[in-house]
Length: 323
Image (cartoon, rainbow, N blue to C red; front, top):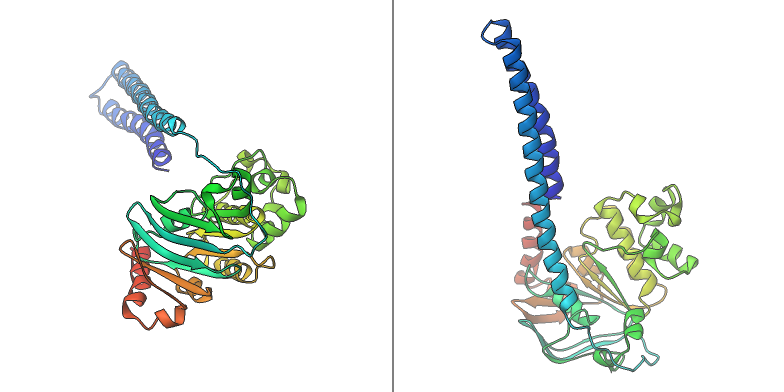
């Protein structure tokens, strides 16, 4: 976004510079202070300067591309994540943290009952996103184990793990040729139902080709992209849904509707939500309150709300959002 904004500004500055040169030169020509040849030369110098500025912009773009390529190379150089050979037994989607510690976050022993909604609450930097990542093995703990229905996540096959857990993020990356491809493997009914739950079905159907619209040709706002990310999680997660700040760009009405769909999930999946709004925490069956990298308390929202320090968490989030 910053690069695009800078490009727009540079695209405006160059024409304005040329107009300014011509305007000033025209006034000087009318006053007899400049000849026609000198005005023409000044205008040409302005064009040459604009061309030089554009070339320097391309050089800057090459430098940014080189830096981006270096970051991609660093990611590609990482060893692949090792997966196990086990599959999941029948179960409700119970998540267990056993003596877990990871990157400054100490979870200890924590159970997320199957089929329930658990909200993770805490100030910025308290570890909410890391806890969400650990729940679906986007990160591994330095110590301890995370289990899904009694099976350590490290022991699951890649397919078993990724089909069991659906993730939605603040800035989802959509991959696929079309919108339908980005949401789920070919299963039209599941995609449509998931999109309806995420309140994405209406705006997708307004696109020229609906769900068959190529992603590259589907202009979307941040909120619409978030809704597609939610729809993907709803479509793919069979036992556990993890929402990490996945509704931050939604308006209040849409967020309430998505929250209602999440609460009334007909498939009864376990839902883990990083909560920034009071309403989200209030809908949860239990709240995990993180404070300075530790689990400070676990309990219903209405019980924790009696603690002034817990209420202050939401006040801090509200003030940060306003600023």
